[in-house]
Amino acid sequence: MDTQAKRALRLIAALELLAAEEQSAAGQGGKALASIQQRAAPLIEDLAKLATYPSVAVFRPRVEALVARRENTARAMANRVEALRTRLIALAESRAQMKRVAPAYGTPRRTNARFAQSV
Image (tube, rainbow, N blue to C red):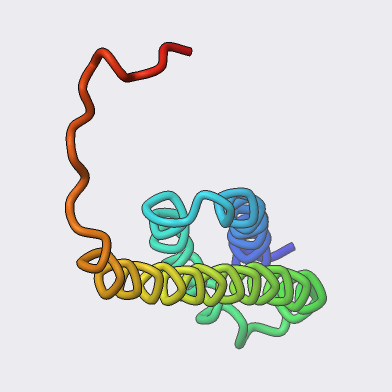
């Protein structure tokens, strides 16, 4: 195996590990996911440069599987973002409705401690 093929194999192995981390971090989102994607970016660039070598072409199925895995993770994250966006819109609508209705009920009055029920 020549030098380019060995380097490509190491890059693919590292990217497969990062893809697994990315998949598990997808539930957490935020900084963990961004960190993994930042670490993967230079590896992807290096692998793309090596793709022109014929000895690296044998790894194409592994790269395609890796790409598919990352696309599935990205799709799952997009679905999660859309669900959160929908929930935020619903909460904003509820808050606006509360602001419209609250003045009709006035402000709550204090109750005398003697009349409060103890549970």
